[in-house]
Image (cartoon, rainbow, N blue to C red; front, top):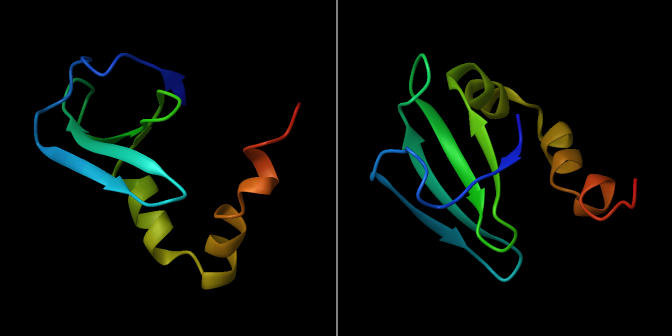
Length: 81
C-alpha cells in the first residue's frame, strides 16, 4: 500500500499539515479510488500511505499498548532490511 508519489497526485484539495519535531505529514482526502480514503504523505521522504475507513477505525480501536508499539520508529523505520 505504501508508495512514493508526487505531491501533485490526484487528491482532493481538502487537508492540511501536521508537524512536530519528530514528523512532518500532509493529510488529504483522495477520491480517485472506489471510495474516499485518507492520503498521508511524509513530507521529509515523500513516502505515501492511503488509509480507508476500516483501517482508520482499526487505529481508533487499538488498545493503547498496540498503538505504542506502532509508534516505535526503531521497530521498522530505521531497519536496514
